[in-house]
Structure formats: C-alpha cells, structure tokens
Length: 483
Ligand SMILES: Cc1ncc(COP(=O)(O)O)c(C=O)c1O
Image (cartoon, rainbow, N blue to C red; front, side, top):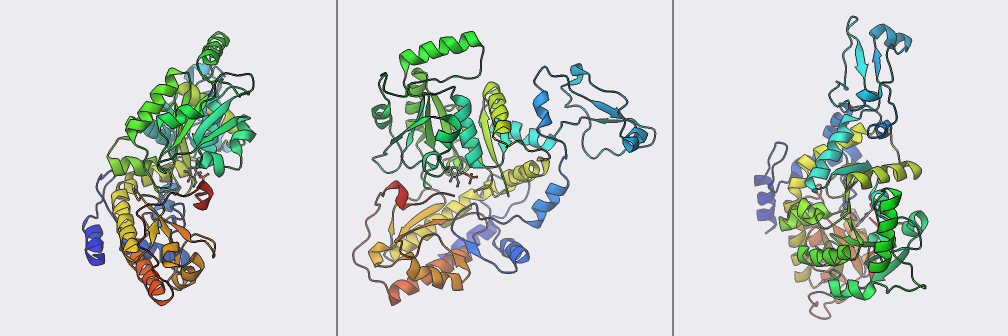
C-alpha cells in the first residue's frame, strides 16, 4: 500500500501554473527541507509548519516593490501624487510634476523595475503594489466577490471581517462553540468589536444545522445584545437598516468555519443557514482558513461557497503553503471599511508585494497538490484504525485526530520515539489524543514511518482494550486547533 501510494504521488507530478490534478513532490521536498534546516523534521503539528523554499525566495526578489498602504488613495477623493521624475531628478529627489487627482487610476503605468535612461522621464506611481493588487483581485474573483484585502494573518482577516460587518454595540456573533474565532483568537471579538458571542454546540459533532442556529438566536429583548448589521453606507441607509434589523433579527453576524477540525461543512446546510440569516438581516462570515481544502475535496468552486457569505477569510499560510498571509474577501464597500480598520489595528503593510507574489505562486502550484495530501491523510487514518487507535472526528481532508486511549497509550508514550525519527506531533505528554495535520511537504515516507513507529509502540507497550468506535465526538477544548 505504502509503495503504491508513493508511486501514485510520484507518477502524478505535473508542472505549469494551474494543473488541477493531484501532485506530490516527495524527493524535492526532502531536499528542500534538508537545505533549509540541515535536518529534515516532518512536523505533523499543523499545516502552518511548512518551510519556504529557494524558489519562493526567488519569486519574492522579483516582486513589485510599491507601497500597499498608499493604495488607499486610489478609490477616494484625496488628490494623489504622481511623480514624473527625470533620471536627474531621481538623483536629486526632485519631483518635476505632481498631484493630479485625475490620474488616480493608474493601473496602466509601468511600475516595476523601471529601467531609466538619461533621456526618458520616469513615471512612478508611488502607491502601486502590483502583486498585492493582482492577488487581491484574483482571490476575489475565485470567491465570486468584488474585492479582497491581503493581510498578515488569519486572525486579522477574521477579526477585520467581523468588525467590518458590525456597526456598534450592543451586538453579537453566533458561531460554533468550537470556532477558532471564538476560542483561539485571544478574545478578539470582545476586544475589537465589543460584541457578545453566542456559541452553539453542533450536536452531530461535524457542523451546525439550521435548527441549532435558530435555537441560538436571541429574541428581541432589552436584556439581549441586539442586531446592528450593515455595511458602511450613507446615514439615511444606515438608519433605515438599523430600524429594519431591529425589527427582524437579533444577531448581526453568523460566523461559520469550513473546514472545522478538517471536516467539511455541507454546502446544502450552509445555504439553509445563510438564506435564513440573510432573510433576517443577519450578515454571514466564513472562517475559511482551509476553505481551499473543502473546495478541493468536494470539487465545489469557492465561488459556490462565496455566494452564501458577506465576508470570507482564507489563509494562505496553511494548506496553500505560503510563508505569510491571509486574505479577506467581500463587497467593495466591506473591503474599503476593512482596509480602514486594518490601518487602525496597525496592520497596514507597506512593501507587501513580495509576500503577495509568493502567495500567488503557492496558489498556482501547491493548491493543486491537495488531493494528494488528502489521499495520504485517509491512508494514515485507515492505518491507525487498523492498529486499534480511534478517530475523534471523521477524516475528510488533511487532519486526523488520533485517539490513543483505545490502546491505553498517551502522546508521551509515542512522541519521543517519533522524534528519534525526526517526526514531531502535537499534544501534551499526558494527552490521549493527537491532532495530526498533513501538508504538501509531508511525504508518503514520513507517513509510513509514523505508522510504523506507532505500531511498534502499540505492540511493545499498548493494549488493545476494545475495538475503537468509528467516531467519538469530543469537547471543543480537547482538540486544540490554535493553528
Ligand atoms: C480555522 C482557523 N482560522 C483562523 C486561524 C488563524 O490564522 P493565523 O494563525 O494566521 O492567525 C487558524 C490558525 O490556525 C485556524 O486554524
């Protein structure tokens, strides 16, 4: 099985920018990891634990170098400064022409790597960051939305999304009790949005249902945090929306997560919740840190998911493998508002082009490899079950929540043996569950080693006490998903 999986991955190597087939590069991955760390460590703790490659650094070097914060002037009525500078003027730093607001949409200007000649005036569009613009418009169109905002982290894009959908307290956000936004973002909703949170338990252990969402919606009452949900519009429209929202709903935002613990939220249920929420004036946010995985695993385009949300946060530094970054998508109004809040949060970044360029490269080359990662994850889950371990959640994408209790072991029993083989796993020594996360740099060989070592420990120390149940669903804090 191991051999055939390995052959499968190697035989599907593809090159080119957007091959939508499973690919895997175990040999080159090993070389890359060795080059960068002198020692290959296969880190199953998170899909954030990928290593930037030399190729990525080359792409960064060639990226656009303009300022992304100054781009804010583009869609406003502020006059912007276009500096036409002769090469002499460049030397003297003297602009010879400036400040024409009519030139504000300057996409057509040459902005990167200008090669000045002594006679040619050099036109610099100082606020341009072409690679950031390209990434934002590409992801917005993938998700079927108008605009996008490239940011430093998934926490930031989640919090900006929620903050930009809300207006002012009292207001609240309804979400899954296991949601990253709720448990693992340092109380950001309270801090940034001053919002109340209504966590709802998903009884099926996989996803919320519309019926559960309905039970979480508070009736209009002076004691509750009522609805204020709208975009940044004129005072008149805001007032009308407030009145409408007060009458029709109590929650400003429903936030869903897809995938959650590696599990896919069915599109049909998302659609029911969204339809119901929106009919009551409630805004919909998606924590789609791993929506890439959901889309690849189901074949459902991101835009199909996107139709049901007002804002979506998609991480680029997890399964996509980019070194840094996450992106928020939404309407033009929403992103304009989020851009303003990003500055307020201290998250405006200047020459971010290199990070955007490498993120785009990863989307084109690593995203298509996800089916291979998912197949390897399935193989790992099946093999651990065969050894007598349990699975806390159904395995649908790139995560296995392996339960050691059925074989009477703890993480502390196996982690040191794995470390000797350069494999790192998550979990405190006394924990009986470990979340194993796969990504494009986890090779089939590393997975086989993991299975072999766990098998050896089970045979030496463990005890199969019962046939593991197919799926046990646990409590939110038992399965830390902070990354
Ligand atoms: C589901 C989910 N959402 C959001 C985030 C936040 O991403 P970041 O670590 O980039 O802030 C994470 C982090 O792992 C996550 O797993």
